[in-house]
View (cartoon, rainbow, N blue to C red):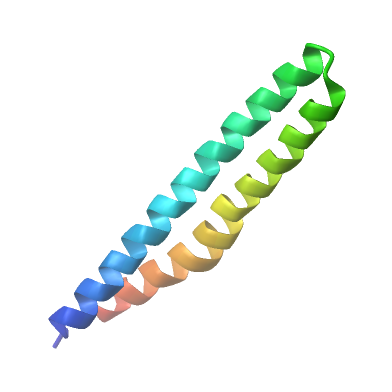
Length: 81
């Protein structure tokens, strides 16, 4: 039998992690695009900073939150249901 309050808390946590992963990934893509446009416009320092921050945001969104947090939570939630 599924404990409804624990299931609801786990579902809300999963939703928060997925939203955070999506937001970090979108920010990463936007920073990458901005960095590449800054480099092509001739501002190498700003472009390099934006590309570096974009890579960091993409890592946080895809790996740290998505692969390491969301997928195990989803598997745990699916196994318990």
